Image (cartoon, rainbow, N blue to C red):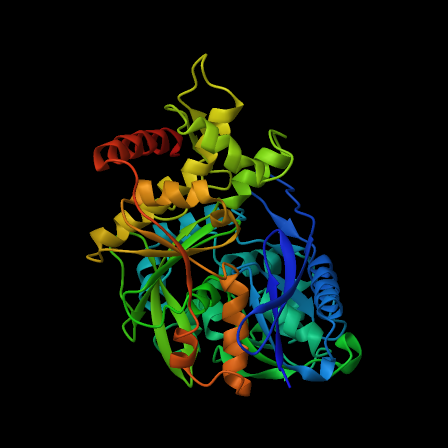
Length: 492
């Protein structure tokens, strides 16, 4: 009898659930968008209750559409938008504030203060991260400082902190389990990636009581059992990892030197560095790739805050398209943005700039410019930002010869070809581009015995299409130089 795994993929703009069979093939998908709140310049929030309700609804919907016996579900894997910060009451389970999203920049001044004190070197040495509002730690401090009574409750052990994975696990298990995995912990500014423990010096500096923190587990582990009434059965949660780590896993990047780039709300290039925590000299992040059987596989990561979110802005903000898929035909017809550059620094710039105060701009407009050029420039911006990341890796001594891509944007053939042109390397797109959810499926399946080993999973990766560079390097270089000039003009 077939055994199924449910992957919960809780993202920045939508919650999804995907049912996979025991060969790693997709059976059904359910998805639901939820509200984005922008209460001030650079602030981004979500309603944790809406995160939970949309997650539960899509999971139930996926099971119903799959038309399977719930008893045949072997496990659940969870993957999540990382760094997004939730604090809730341990007794009632109610959040004490909206979730502060990874894109949020409200703690920029505090990060600058810590930098001025010379604390960034300590943070980098212990966590592999930089001092930036992106990460959870300063968001957590803000909630404790700004929500009335929060510090008193935290000191009394009445509050729990978690990234979205922890919050969902708490709700799925009826408040019985407060855990996270090593990948999500590694994105908090509070976790020492070398000792694999919460770090007392970092907690003291940010004034965060350790009683708030979840227990840190392997990425494949016995996280807990769901409440029977939620899904119709008590199902083990057996895999958890942040979305980019799951994508690395789902792409089969198990060997040092293998690189994937995911194009969702943001864009994230992650390179497997094996058992070595490589420290970048070019503002890339050192992070936990995944942790299995207590053994850590490290990774180097370049984080871009805005990728698919820029297309969403074209659709919802400017109303230049009705559906994101329309951009492919527009770009095909336009070919090139003709000197127009969109720098999508809506919430600052991530790697390799780490400029929290930069803001977006469209540069190079002429009387010939129109909607088509702006749409094309938006798609090209994602490719240029990816080249920024690969250049940083090259400056760290890591040359990239091929890139495995996934995520919603690279279903667009024009974008995938533009990536190959811009990077001047082959771009490989797998048969299953839902690799974030697939990684969660693999992690859970390993734990419950549906999948035998990494070698078993490595053999499952299948190429759907390879995109080769189609323009001369000199043309690619000239376009990229225009991008660099545009970025320089929006830097704070």
